[in-house]
Amino acid sequence: MPNAKLNQDTEPNRLANSPFSLTILGAGSATPTLKLHQTAQLLTIGSDHVLIDCGEGTQLRLIEQRIRPGRLRYIFISHLHGDHYFGLPPLLSSLNLGGRTEDLFLFGPRGLDEVLTTIFRVSDSRLGFRLHFQVVEPGTPTLLLDHPLMTVESIPLQHRIDCSGYLFREKPHKPHLLREKLPDDVPVHYLKQLKNGEDILGPTGEILFASAEYTEPGPPARSYAYCSDTRYVEELVPQLQGVNLLYHEATFMEDNAQRATEVYHSTAKQAATIAAKAGAERLLIGHFSSRYKQFDLFLEEARSVFPETYLAIEGQTTSI
Ligand SMILES: [Zn+2]
Ligand SMILES: [Zn+2]
Image (cartoon, rainbow, N blue to C red):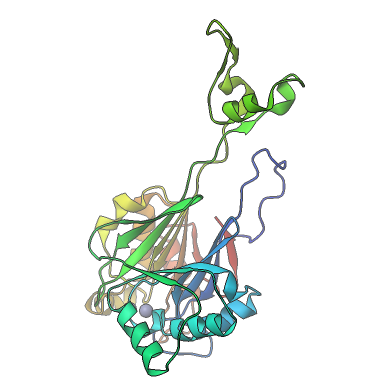
């Protein structure tokens, strides 16, 4: 697995990236096993925590990872098969018990609001915080969130019921200022302009300080694509082009390719084919069927097509 640690070799304030990392909370599929938990992932961007899917027991996985559930701000649910959201009602209840007052933003398929409303109604629960729900329409990629640090768009997947993946893209980083190249007495507002890519002009329009000369490009913006339950969909490739980290389900191996297609799931080789065609940097595979006991074979199969494949391992954090 890629290492969890951020690259500490870079100088602070130079090319140091802000946190953008993924922690696997659950990598199993629908049938419960003692080895794997149901699907949930935590994406950390800057100081924000984003929960992606919320299988049974996710709140306990968060506690295990020493992530206070109260720090969650955004939750994205891919589809309404229980192994992807049955952990949500207890998580919301616990947030309420914990006295949460901050707004929480939930994205998911039509019907999720109905389920939650019914549960809260029959248990006579009233949330002490605002839960904003946005329906994710299946079928076409849609911009769902424009956050100061990232955008999130839906990825249309093909599963037995409506299902969407999510593409998280960092916004471009501002250039870094080469402060030591500038005179000490340069006015502070010049620094901001230079960082914004603007040249500093003199009274007659001559360039006093060219932005390109006193800055260097910031680190490239990174991206993470989450492809939850889906059969092999080659039409995903253009949207996933060049993604830094791709998670793609791999419920089966090629020995069950026929079954995978019938039940709208993918094989490890198919996941790897999507990653290769999309020119992804790295691939994580997960959602392994409980019929398999040996996950190394998934890795072998996927790596024969896309060498930069890694298993989604619960509790591990991948820096993107
Ligand atoms: Zn599933
Ligand atoms: Zn499913």
